[in-house]
Image (cartoon, rainbow, N blue to C red; front, top):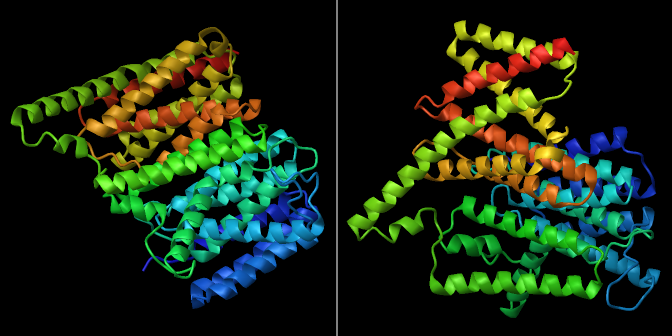
Length: 499
């Protein structure tokens, strides 16, 4: 049985850095206390399978700590006409919202990597908002939660080696909810109070939809069934991988909408969310009625009855696999060597580092295959990071920015075609997809530091995948990659010592 101790690791991995390094104030002290209550009740639930009323008791207690001790309250309520909501209304509303968000994320934990990935996307958006409003303490807390969640997801992608259990899912829901209120309910912010609804849009939609349907059927809203959105996608014939990726993408779209319209009127955000929710529910229902099956390769099975069409399709797939591989084997070495040549003053420290990497790469030629495996990848990954940094942080982007973006976009398309159509076993996990989504979404945000970091991350990720594709290709395509890595290291080493 897969252990459900991942949640304990997430909580510890979050709270220890927060207590050690985050500038503590009343609301964050209260958050830590509330999170500890969630932690205790979560462990008891994972061990003893608590009655839902006891779980609610723990969630309400944690929410009361945050509201009464930390002063985290919903005071700006959209569409009701209040400048500031009276405390007698604000307190129960805040408790209700925090308990609701805690359960929304908890109930979304139905597939490997789903709850953690959705929380990570939401926290990523909150980190941008915290950065923009200058709340460094909240930013550090959000980063701590994200780091702990990333570490957990490494072992929670399908097939999962470890689960987060109720401890982890309730902690993530509670933490994301509290951070959303801290960031968006500030008195000095112009961000709409409805932004958190879009940031956690899919878990909220899923929870409301499921509970309404259960009540309509005369059942308890907390009863178990298979009405969740991810269950409906599985019922359509989708694999776990496809369902999780689809939900990640839908959540990323909502987060982009939340960010783009963060300063818009509350009514506009409400209409956007309602429209998105209707499209989601109607779309899934339409697919269900048609009996659509969306498993990988369905498009090719349509042609199974016609041998000529099947041969044509196989020829096209073979062509795309071959030429995407050839394109990668030509462009990646060109990028590595060209980026090294275009690098400005690199400094003596870079010269020393690249010299050491080049030396260990050459020594590895006479050592065991396992040593050579890691030696080559270490050198390739480091030079990839260096080249992307020099391309994005120098005048290259000012002069040839569109060309650089085109080349990396071309590499991304070639990687996707190769992974889809080649016969090489090259697994792309849902965590890989999540990282790609984050890398694509972050550059779309206007905060200058985040945008710059996002483009750097996206370029590095594309080169990393391209390097792995070439090294896994058994047709000799990796020779030019190895030569280009050595050449790029040599160029940077010489430049470093000449400066």
